[in-house]
Image 1 (cartoon, one colour):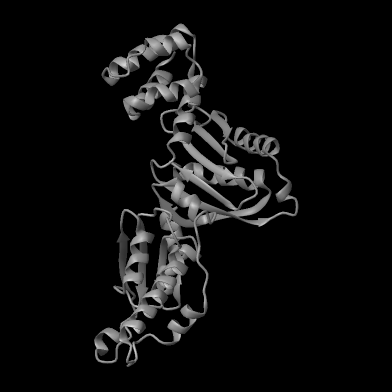
Image 2 (spheres, helix red, strand yellow):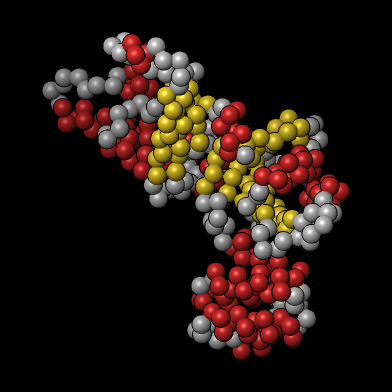
Length: 345
């Protein structure tokens, strides 16, 4: 094996807990049963790496086989690195007819046409997701397999999930995706997280949603407790309504595990008591960041417990309703400015 293949293999093995190495190598199916039994998975990582490399050389494996192992590792461990969501738009009439073979041909043909040295591998996972690994080179240098871009796309959906993409390659990847999926354009989804699973669950609605009922509509019109002889019964009714509203906003049951939501403020002072501030033409700028190991569960608890007053503000419910965790708050309301988009690209 060459130095690049050895480096990629070394990096993969060192990332995996010792107890999981055997299972990954079995799925790879490039080592014999005898070779797998000969490995001692209780030994230090550097020793395991040396033995695996020796077996790879014995079996005359090359970089192609090693990158296949890396893809298996990433598919089995999707919640690593930082993932960004993009959304396809302006679908052509025959976009729903695109099959995997056609997608592969058009995607690879475009990238090979614009970049001389590039390596592209694709795998279709059990959940119908197409995983793409791209090692980028250029007209003068060979592909760098140590810094590949990963792309995940579920055919016939409008969402694409991307990890480890540098700015200079973005236009080539976006063009290839638009052509291969038969869409007119692709835009930033303004959603990023370290968990690909959470991102897919949120955008593809793979979580238990709750829908408005009559009680939640009543609560939106009546936000304070009125005097009542049976105050305990009234409190119970309000607890039930708060629970319903929290579920409508953030889902019922396990929620997608987003960790952050960012709100960028670009607003003017609107108070009447301070003319120095109210007469300023410049925006007040700032950033508000919510963080939690499971942000949607935390927000749902705040509403259900009464820590946050209902009804839920659209600034928070927009996380699930719009599938975003990055917002720009302007005088016109929450949105995403073109300036912010350019800075994040």
